[in-house]
Image (cartoon, rainbow, N blue to C red):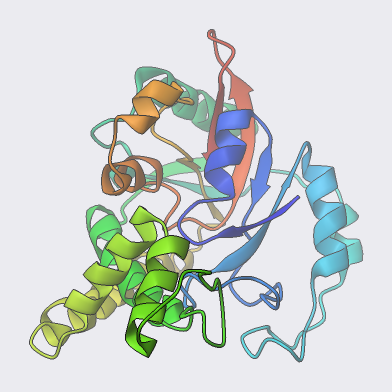
Length: 285
């Protein structure tokens, strides 16, 4: 299946279900046909039972698209995906900041298990630092709301989107009715937040500052790659799949802070290891 991954919406469900979720690097897959949420972060992702299935789909859909200007004009040799891979002599980083508040014991134990497994396979495992990780969710929340406010402004029911069948007295009342009926509570709250952050009096304080922090987060990763690390191994979610009642008891912002802490700055999700309660624990590579 295909999905969109902005902060973890492909990797998190895959983690909870014990399957493979893959978020390609930005620009590798065309976003044409995808309803935009956050243009600067939206990435089409692939969900499948196995890595091989993901690879098969990826090799078909990868490539340039004239309908998406962000899609990279490059040709990758997908035959290389078929080659066997050895962890030997790879440098693997374990980010210290991902050992955070709320990380369950079974997720942490599995993280240590994977690190030991790699180490025993003659891969080099070392702790690394991504110092701005804790600011990632707050930064993401601001930028997300700002871009949602911009993207959702087109859905007035005049040229795009749902149109109410109710009688209306004015052009403004038609648009208001259309948006109230069509847009959910979470979407409306993000639009309001985004409009607040984008006010002239708040623009520099919130939006521009968030862009600066985003650059710092990006630089953290670049510093790791410049230190000749090949991969980072992190949890995908802080816990195994919660009960529906537990999930519904949290507001949307708390849900995002819990679910996206590890995935928002990550690129790819990895294999699962099944725990005692038969709920999968997934890790991102």
